[in-house]
Length: 316
Image 1: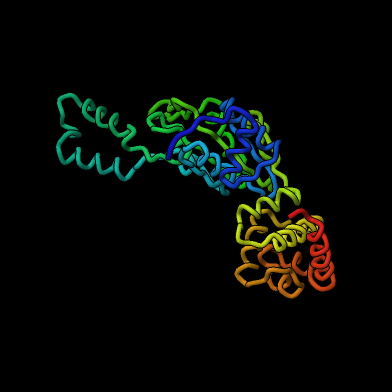
Image 2: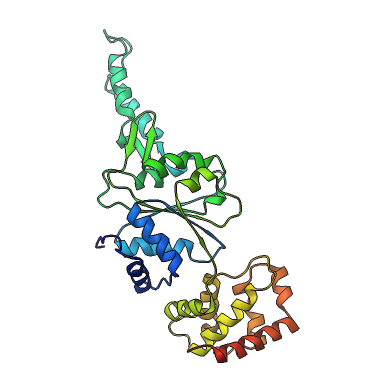
């Protein structure tokens, strides 16, 4: 992996992302450029499946940096996110010291050797590094891209742990001291907005709402991600998905679902949409039975006809 510098302009950012098949709009390319040039965390919020996680992966590839991912979940704490002490290994060290007589209570200077042993127990070799600490490790040969994914899934108190990392790219470990990155990592945070993320986190980041793409950009995404799909099929798929997103659904299909549906239709050797195959494959696009039921029947037939008509007028 060859490390490369940040893009010099918005156009260069967009072009380098596009070379890796990430089709970014101008606004996203702008905020990504600023995050890289200013060394500021990038906070991406939006519906699931709109490419928030994917841009972190693409930036890591684009810059030739390793990707460290912290997947957030309810109950996530400092031990799982940042570090914890290897208590089993520390206990073994104590047992070995006892066997060697280095912690004998009958020593002429009680506590001196025991104190020295205690000091050795809280060093880096007994520290288990989790993603946050890995990302700011000053010994890392290449500063990574740190992806803090789906922050809204974590409990609100967890956000307080992040503030020191986001502000100063450091972590304070009571037994060891402060670990600070020599070169700041690139930090990307994502949220599906299942709850509001605290203002203290937002203030430390550059913010961007990642929306669903328009039809033209989604067709380009399909052309790059599913190049084997005929243009006519891609146009119909995009027209149908765009129509679904205009409906009152529990969960609107994201770009990830569009790509997966196009691949599914190719596997089934269907190069033209028809109500029967669309009805049979709706579970690729929609993840709630109520949504599937809302689209079935006459509504499905109308949507398919509408998609086929719109696709005829779409640019190739």
